Length: 293
Image (tube, rainbow, N blue to C red; front, side, top):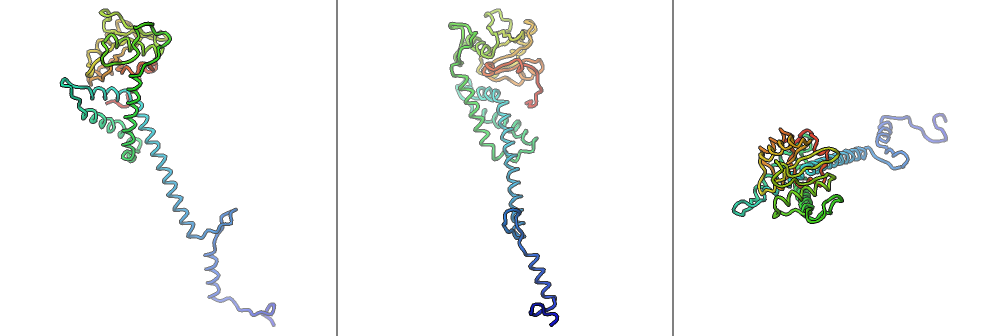
Protein backbone atom coordinates (compact mmCIF):
# COMPACT_ATOMS: atom_id res chain seq x y z
CA UNK A 1 0.00 0.00 0.00
CA UNK A 2 1.36 3.41 -0.86
CA UNK A 3 2.72 5.45 2.04
CA UNK A 4 3.74 2.37 4.04
CA UNK A 5 7.40 1.67 3.23
CA UNK A 6 8.78 -1.63 4.47
CA UNK A 7 5.36 -2.53 5.76
CA UNK A 8 5.44 0.04 8.63
CA UNK A 9 3.07 2.85 9.37
CA UNK A 10 3.94 6.39 8.42
CA UNK A 11 2.69 9.61 10.02
CA UNK A 12 3.35 13.01 8.54
CA UNK A 13 5.42 15.32 10.71
CA UNK A 14 3.41 17.56 12.95
CA UNK A 15 4.08 20.52 15.23
CA UNK A 16 4.89 18.28 18.20
CA UNK A 17 7.54 16.27 16.35
CA UNK A 18 9.22 19.50 15.12
CA UNK A 19 9.50 20.79 18.70
CA UNK A 20 11.00 17.53 19.87
CA UNK A 21 13.61 17.54 17.12
CA UNK A 22 14.54 21.19 17.87
CA UNK A 23 14.99 20.51 21.59
CA UNK A 24 17.18 17.50 20.95
CA UNK A 25 19.32 19.47 18.50
CA UNK A 26 19.88 22.41 20.85
CA UNK A 27 20.61 20.30 23.92
CA UNK A 28 22.92 17.87 22.21
CA UNK A 29 26.36 17.81 23.82
CA UNK A 30 29.46 18.92 21.92
CA UNK A 31 32.81 17.23 22.08
CA UNK A 32 36.29 18.58 22.71
CA UNK A 33 38.35 18.04 19.55
CA UNK A 34 40.56 14.99 19.77
CA UNK A 35 39.39 14.06 23.28
CA UNK A 36 35.91 12.69 22.92
CA UNK A 37 34.83 14.51 26.09
CA UNK A 38 31.34 15.86 25.97
CA UNK A 39 30.77 19.40 27.23
CA UNK A 40 27.29 20.74 27.69
CA UNK A 41 26.57 24.44 26.96
CA UNK A 42 26.35 25.21 30.68
CA UNK A 43 29.83 23.75 31.13
CA UNK A 44 31.22 26.22 28.61
CA UNK A 45 30.05 29.11 30.75
CA UNK A 46 31.54 27.58 33.89
CA UNK A 47 34.86 26.87 32.16
CA UNK A 48 35.01 30.41 30.80
CA UNK A 49 34.33 31.80 34.28
CA UNK A 50 37.19 29.82 35.84
CA UNK A 51 39.56 30.74 33.01
CA UNK A 52 38.85 34.43 33.61
CA UNK A 53 39.50 34.00 37.33
CA UNK A 54 42.75 32.17 36.63
CA UNK A 55 44.05 34.83 34.25
CA UNK A 56 43.15 37.57 36.72
CA UNK A 57 44.99 35.71 39.47
CA UNK A 58 48.09 35.25 37.30
CA UNK A 59 48.05 38.92 36.34
CA UNK A 60 47.83 39.96 39.99
CA UNK A 61 50.66 37.62 40.95
CA UNK A 62 52.91 39.13 38.26
CA UNK A 63 52.10 42.67 39.37
CA UNK A 64 52.77 41.81 43.02
CA UNK A 65 56.10 40.24 42.04
CA UNK A 66 56.95 43.42 40.13
CA UNK A 67 56.11 45.50 43.22
CA UNK A 68 58.37 43.37 45.42
CA UNK A 69 61.26 43.57 42.96
CA UNK A 70 60.89 47.35 42.88
CA UNK A 71 60.98 47.51 46.69
CA UNK A 72 64.11 45.35 46.80
CA UNK A 73 65.77 47.58 44.21
CA UNK A 74 65.01 50.72 46.21
CA UNK A 75 66.29 49.16 49.43
CA UNK A 76 69.55 48.17 47.72
CA UNK A 77 69.85 51.65 46.22
CA UNK A 78 69.54 53.36 49.61
CA UNK A 79 71.07 50.69 51.86
CA UNK A 80 74.13 52.70 52.85
CA UNK A 81 72.05 55.78 53.60
CA UNK A 82 69.78 53.66 55.77
CA UNK A 83 72.79 52.37 57.71
CA UNK A 84 74.04 55.90 58.20
CA UNK A 85 70.69 57.13 59.41
CA UNK A 86 70.25 54.19 61.77
CA UNK A 87 73.64 54.76 63.35
CA UNK A 88 72.89 58.45 63.68
CA UNK A 89 69.42 57.96 65.16
CA UNK A 90 70.54 55.25 67.58
CA UNK A 91 73.57 57.17 68.86
CA UNK A 92 73.55 57.92 72.58
CA UNK A 93 72.96 61.53 73.49
CA UNK A 94 74.95 63.49 76.07
CA UNK A 95 73.06 61.68 78.82
CA UNK A 96 73.68 58.19 77.41
CA UNK A 97 70.08 57.78 76.25
CA UNK A 98 69.18 56.26 72.86
CA UNK A 99 65.96 57.56 71.31
CA UNK A 100 64.40 54.57 69.53
CA UNK A 101 61.54 56.73 68.25
CA UNK A 102 63.99 58.74 66.15
CA UNK A 103 64.94 55.68 64.05
CA UNK A 104 61.32 54.56 63.75
CA UNK A 105 60.37 58.00 62.49
CA UNK A 106 63.22 57.88 59.96
CA UNK A 107 62.15 54.43 58.79
CA UNK A 108 58.54 55.55 58.38
CA UNK A 109 59.70 58.54 56.36
CA UNK A 110 61.75 56.29 54.04
CA UNK A 111 58.82 53.92 53.53
CA UNK A 112 56.33 56.68 52.78
CA UNK A 113 58.44 59.10 50.73
CA UNK A 114 60.56 56.60 48.79
CA UNK A 115 58.99 53.14 48.73
CA UNK A 116 55.28 53.90 48.71
CA UNK A 117 55.71 56.95 46.51
CA UNK A 118 57.51 54.90 43.87
CA UNK A 119 54.86 52.17 44.03
CA UNK A 120 52.20 54.81 43.44
CA UNK A 121 54.04 56.06 40.36
CA UNK A 122 54.00 52.51 38.97
CA UNK A 123 50.32 51.95 39.93
CA UNK A 124 51.36 49.23 42.38
CA UNK A 125 50.42 50.90 45.67
CA UNK A 126 47.64 48.37 46.28
CA UNK A 127 50.27 45.77 47.21
CA UNK A 128 51.98 47.88 49.90
CA UNK A 129 49.78 46.67 52.82
CA UNK A 130 50.56 43.03 52.06
CA UNK A 131 54.28 43.70 51.46
CA UNK A 132 54.96 46.23 54.23
CA UNK A 133 55.97 43.77 56.95
CA UNK A 134 58.09 41.77 54.53
CA UNK A 135 59.78 44.98 53.39
CA UNK A 136 60.65 46.03 56.96
CA UNK A 137 62.13 42.60 57.61
CA UNK A 138 64.27 42.89 54.48
CA UNK A 139 65.53 46.34 55.50
CA UNK A 140 66.47 44.96 58.90
CA UNK A 141 68.26 41.98 57.35
CA UNK A 142 70.18 44.09 54.79
CA UNK A 143 71.43 46.51 57.44
CA UNK A 144 72.42 43.64 59.72
CA UNK A 145 74.55 42.16 56.93
CA UNK A 146 76.17 45.51 56.16
CA UNK A 147 76.99 46.18 59.80
CA UNK A 148 78.42 42.67 60.20
CA UNK A 149 80.60 43.13 57.12
CA UNK A 150 81.69 46.44 58.55
CA UNK A 151 82.82 44.81 61.80
CA UNK A 152 84.32 41.55 60.47
CA UNK A 153 88.06 41.32 59.79
CA UNK A 154 88.85 42.03 56.14
CA UNK A 155 91.65 40.38 54.13
CA UNK A 156 94.66 42.52 53.40
CA UNK A 157 94.81 43.77 49.80
CA UNK A 158 97.92 42.78 47.80
CA UNK A 159 99.36 46.30 47.80
CA UNK A 160 98.53 47.10 51.42
CA UNK A 161 101.31 48.31 53.64
CA UNK A 162 102.80 45.74 55.97
CA UNK A 163 102.90 46.05 59.72
CA UNK A 164 100.51 47.97 61.91
CA UNK A 165 99.78 50.83 59.49
CA UNK A 166 96.71 49.04 58.07
CA UNK A 167 93.56 48.98 60.20
CA UNK A 168 91.37 46.04 59.20
CA UNK A 169 88.34 46.51 61.44
CA UNK A 170 86.19 49.47 62.33
CA UNK A 171 85.73 50.36 65.97
CA UNK A 172 83.88 53.29 67.45
CA UNK A 173 86.76 53.61 69.93
CA UNK A 174 89.48 54.17 67.31
CA UNK A 175 91.09 57.59 67.08
CA UNK A 176 90.81 59.81 63.98
CA UNK A 177 94.23 58.76 62.64
CA UNK A 178 93.29 55.09 62.89
CA UNK A 179 90.05 55.88 61.10
CA UNK A 180 91.96 57.51 58.25
CA UNK A 181 94.20 54.43 57.89
CA UNK A 182 91.12 52.21 58.04
CA UNK A 183 89.45 54.16 55.22
CA UNK A 184 92.64 54.06 53.14
CA UNK A 185 92.79 50.27 53.47
CA UNK A 186 89.20 50.00 52.26
CA UNK A 187 90.05 52.10 49.20
CA UNK A 188 93.00 49.84 48.42
CA UNK A 189 90.60 46.93 48.43
CA UNK A 190 88.69 48.68 45.67
CA UNK A 191 91.86 49.05 43.59
CA UNK A 192 92.85 52.60 44.54
CA UNK A 193 96.36 53.65 45.40
CA UNK A 194 95.43 55.35 48.65
CA UNK A 195 97.53 56.79 51.46
CA UNK A 196 96.78 59.14 54.37
CA UNK A 197 98.40 62.57 54.32
CA UNK A 198 100.87 63.54 57.07
CA UNK A 199 99.16 64.99 60.15
CA UNK A 200 99.18 68.77 60.28
CA UNK A 201 99.93 69.23 56.59
CA UNK A 202 96.73 67.95 55.02
CA UNK A 203 95.06 71.33 54.31
CA UNK A 204 91.68 69.65 54.55
CA UNK A 205 92.74 66.39 52.85
CA UNK A 206 93.09 63.26 54.97
CA UNK A 207 93.50 60.72 52.13
CA UNK A 208 94.72 61.02 48.55
CA UNK A 209 93.62 58.16 46.27
CA UNK A 210 94.45 57.61 42.60
CA UNK A 211 93.26 55.11 40.00
CA UNK A 212 93.81 55.26 36.23
CA UNK A 213 95.19 58.80 36.54
CA UNK A 214 92.04 59.90 38.38
CA UNK A 215 92.70 61.65 41.70
CA UNK A 216 90.27 61.61 44.62
CA UNK A 217 90.75 63.62 47.81
CA UNK A 218 88.93 62.61 50.99
CA UNK A 219 88.30 64.11 54.39
CA UNK A 220 87.49 61.56 57.11
CA UNK A 221 85.14 62.36 59.98
CA UNK A 222 84.84 59.92 62.90
CA UNK A 223 81.78 61.45 64.54
CA UNK A 224 79.03 60.54 66.95
CA UNK A 225 76.71 63.10 65.34
CA UNK A 226 75.87 64.10 61.76
CA UNK A 227 78.64 65.87 59.86
CA UNK A 228 77.99 69.53 59.02
CA UNK A 229 78.72 71.59 55.93
CA UNK A 230 82.15 72.79 57.20
CA UNK A 231 83.70 69.50 56.10
CA UNK A 232 82.12 69.91 52.66
CA UNK A 233 83.58 73.42 52.32
CA UNK A 234 87.06 72.24 53.34
CA UNK A 235 87.23 69.25 50.98
CA UNK A 236 85.83 71.34 48.11
CA UNK A 237 88.69 73.82 48.61
CA UNK A 238 91.16 70.93 48.94
CA UNK A 239 90.02 69.48 45.61
CA UNK A 240 90.97 72.72 43.89
CA UNK A 241 94.24 72.96 45.79
CA UNK A 242 95.24 69.35 44.98
CA UNK A 243 93.94 69.61 41.40
CA UNK A 244 91.87 66.50 42.01
CA UNK A 245 89.06 65.22 39.85
CA UNK A 246 86.75 64.29 42.74
CA UNK A 247 86.30 65.08 46.41
CA UNK A 248 84.45 63.23 49.15
CA UNK A 249 83.73 63.31 52.85
CA UNK A 250 83.71 59.89 54.54
CA UNK A 251 82.13 59.32 57.93
CA UNK A 252 80.75 56.65 60.20
CA UNK A 253 77.76 58.90 60.90
CA UNK A 254 75.24 60.68 58.71
CA UNK A 255 75.18 64.21 57.33
CA UNK A 256 73.07 67.24 58.12
CA UNK A 257 70.64 68.59 55.57
CA UNK A 258 72.74 71.76 54.94
CA UNK A 259 75.77 69.52 54.32
CA UNK A 260 73.84 67.45 51.78
CA UNK A 261 72.54 70.56 50.05
CA UNK A 262 76.02 72.09 49.82
CA UNK A 263 77.50 68.79 48.62
CA UNK A 264 74.90 68.59 45.87
CA UNK A 265 75.74 72.13 44.75
CA UNK A 266 79.54 71.66 44.81
CA UNK A 267 79.76 68.07 43.51
CA UNK A 268 81.26 66.72 46.74
CA UNK A 269 80.39 63.11 47.52
CA UNK A 270 79.12 62.21 51.00
CA UNK A 271 80.01 58.59 51.77
CA UNK A 272 79.84 56.03 54.53
CA UNK A 273 83.08 54.11 55.02
CA UNK A 274 81.30 50.83 54.18
CA UNK A 275 81.05 52.08 50.57
CA UNK A 276 84.81 52.45 50.11
CA UNK A 277 85.73 48.78 49.58
CA UNK A 278 83.69 48.72 46.34
CA UNK A 279 84.08 52.35 45.28
CA UNK A 280 84.78 52.75 41.55
CA UNK A 281 85.35 55.73 39.29
CA UNK A 282 81.89 55.17 37.81
CA UNK A 283 80.38 55.67 41.27
CA UNK A 284 81.90 59.13 41.42
CA UNK A 285 80.51 60.35 38.13
CA UNK A 286 77.46 62.59 38.43
CA UNK A 287 74.05 61.04 37.88
CA UNK A 288 70.52 62.42 38.17
CA UNK A 289 69.08 62.45 41.66
CA UNK A 290 65.74 60.70 41.17
CA UNK A 291 64.93 60.43 44.86
CA UNK A 292 65.94 63.79 46.25
CA UNK A 293 64.89 64.12 49.88
